[in-house]
Amino acid sequence: MNVMINERLLQLLIDSFWDILIPGLTMTLPLTAISFSFALVIAVITALIQFADIRGLKQAARFYVWVIRGTPLLVQLFVVFYGLPSVGILIDPFPAAVLVFSINEGAYCSETIRAALESVPAGQIEAGQCVGMSYLQIIRRIVLPQAMRTAFPPLSNSLIAMVKDTSLAANITVVEMFMATQRIVARTFEPLALYIEVGLIYLLFCTVLTKLQAIGERRLNAYGRKVG
Image 1 (cartoon, one colour):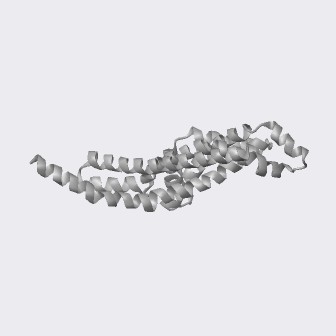
Image 2 (tube, rainbow, N blue to C red; image 1 turned 90 degrees about the vertical axis):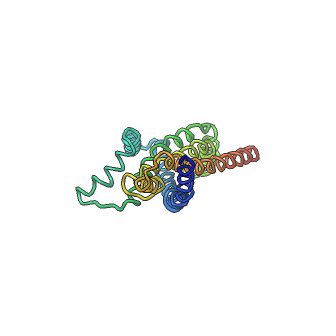
């Protein structure tokens, strides 16, 4: 009897593997990549506004970071997907998830980039001014390249965390890996094995990204030594 149960469970895990992995490749990873790309744009703009100390805009940027970091991501998803329709704004599940993840991650990444910008020695900025560079040239040629090298490891960690956070998109009906697993669980009544399986697939994705992060850090360090 136990052998039959184990064989059935093993076959279930084999059959469900692709049913979970394919939504991961076609929904979880694209959702992560698109959202993180937009988040980086938001983060750089927000960090530069604070670094430049632009009055008015700096306060707006700080307010944005304060609100987003101070409220749960799940609540933000519900506000956009379930709350906005009450005022006539309807957004499909995938774009709603991209919007929320981008805004949420942008707030966190902006603080990482801001700290990296402030870590660039003031003497290098003064040197750029001495050779006649404009402020924008100093930012683009001196400050940003160094800051992004410093920010690369924590930004990579944020990307890896976002892969796991996309599971929350199941709450707004995005059919990513976790929702695909939930549907299989509802049909087969094997929650323990299937949730462990999807956890291992998330672990696989994050392990690959961790390896890529290590390669990127080595190349950036080699480039920094070469330039230095």
